[in-house]
Length: 177
Image (cartoon, rainbow, N blue to C red; front, side, top):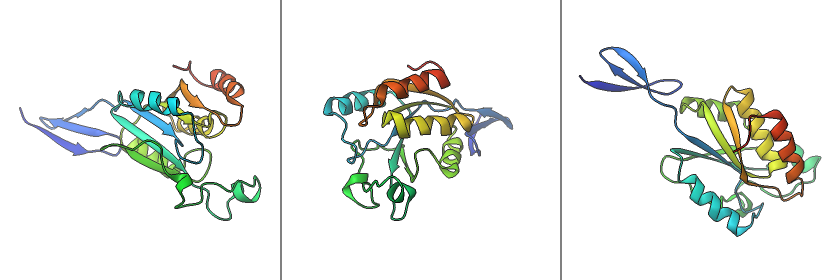
């Protein structure tokens, strides 16, 4: 019996005797905004790096705050200008990982489509800041039909709003890991 791999819009399909066999969706970890602008504690980075090795697919998000954005105009946020050290990731993506650039709290439709093309149906989310981008990324994924869970001990907030953010997540999503 010969098998042939064929690209599919939602996942890799194997064909055997003309019948499609869907491959298992990749174990996916979405690592939100682990970049120089937000400076998490060093021990946090070490734990996250070790945990991330367990996943077939690691998706890094990078927040970029271009000139004229609402973040700059209304919230007076000046960090993360495109091309500056603020946007540099603090963990290095490995072969097979990918980076989604985002210009908002959550993920764009194009970013969601990219995840779905890779066959992502479930994802574990961790990263920075729990009360802003982590929460928004979780809502983006959930609204797009992706089963999403929080890796609670690998989230951090620089704002002091970690505990209220975790309460929202516990009320709105399946039980955190």
